[in-house]
Image 1: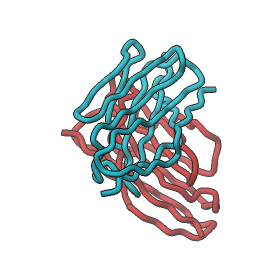
Image 2 (image 1 turned 45 degrees about the vertical axis):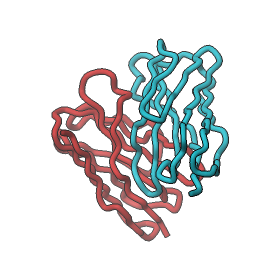
Image 3 (image 1 turned 90 degrees about the vertical axis):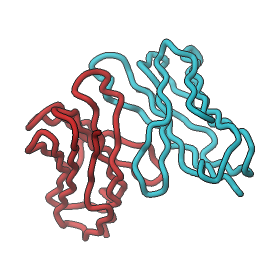
Image 4 (image 1 turned 60 degrees about the vertical axis):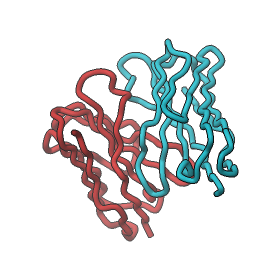
Length: 114
Length: 114
């Protein structure tokens, strides 16, 4: 059974700092990995998706990497801003007919202090 | 463009009362539809999955049921709520073609059972 762990559970940084969020998964046979953002009391917004054959994806100040063999992904946020404050979730998808079954981590709650 | 609507945003219900949460998708046909629950301190858990009208797959045995009376309408129900049903419920959709793991989430319903 796939398990996804996110460390740390919470992170507080001053504005302008670069930061890294970590995600690890136990079964490396994944189809892809996604990073989501969740604002308090809101739904999820997809940030980045990395296919299993890819090593990284970039969108603006966000860069996600994937090391499938070691079961790890990182989300790098450059020059953090107060508006980046949210909970960040990673989710992995298996191959095959069950690809809709995303397994989520519990998230990292990020606070960027002005 | 496609949009997903969930209502109500917040709901407080007594133990033993019935439940009906509704989700609708606009701007697409024959979407795959999903109900997730996010309980405090836990990751998102997939509850139900539907590929078409009247076709429901239950991922976790529980006190809840789901129905899809129309192509773009997905309803989560319970005949008698339990305290353990409290949580944040999210509806999501994905295009009818692959990949099913590219899911788009609604704003969620916060359910408190007292």
